[in-house]
Image 1 (cartoon, helix red, strand yellow):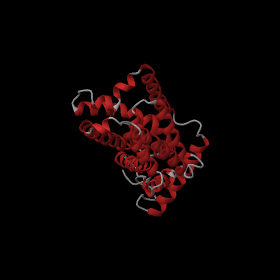
Image 2: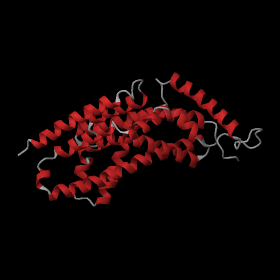
Image 3: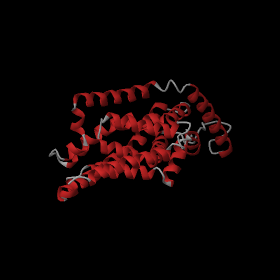
Image 4: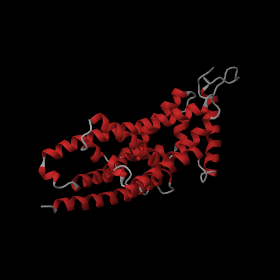
Length: 285
């Protein structure tokens, strides 16, 4: 069977014809886009349940106090071997990915769902797409956790910094606020805000192609939101008000009508919060 974009064996227009392929793909994405936005209030039930379940677990963890058991600080200083602490953290990090990142990626996921319905094994392709996307953010979570272990080693050897823990949180907020003004943020956000164009350029049939598409989308999403998710990491897994605020920011930036215009004011707000935390640390004896 032809593994091109949309071609099928025996088709009078083989998938190798770029003109025919591009026209058909554009037509399908255009139709899918209309369907997606017309039914935006009713996203895919599986995704809705997954997001709702992730938030329910986060709420339960916050209310029972058990969320702190999976905080990166508790895991790093809990006496577990580093590989065990990392494994437990990454399990909890999946909750953060589903609760915080999937909502802002729903437009592209819905478009992919509609377009991929015409290929063999569409459910497998969708799972591969989501797996590639989650894999990128899992890699970021692992890097953040390993970086946090290095910071713990630094704090253990530097008493002045150990006495001013809010300085680290302030630095993270300042980094996130500054990144809002960067060209990389703008370029990646532009791609994330136009999922149809990204799908048109990169979509191919097949499970491995779906995985690559998910990885590619995840890379752009990471380029857009890594600093905000670093703030979520610093706040800790299942810290509800930070999770809710940052999720709202990312959804607004990537899907809101004035999302691009709001990037810099959000950056200013993060910088102000960072300076306040830094000032608190500077005032410590």
